Image (tube, rainbow, N blue to C red; front, side, top):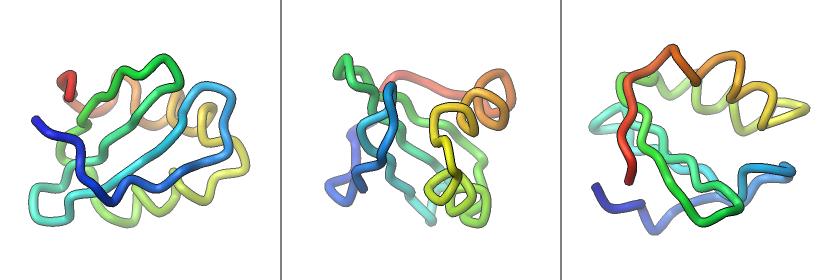
Length: 73
């Protein structure tokens, strides 16, 4: 699953960029170590919440990990 070209950089100590595929309801997360994952079934509003969270990493840990199915991108 390729990472979209429209990834947006975020201020985080663990996450470098995020992206969203509205057609497939998929959020892409790229980590500082270069790995990237696709989280499926995510509504656009939830993606906006992630991008605008005071701590993107903390928000991701609370609201994405072990919540949405994912695969390595």
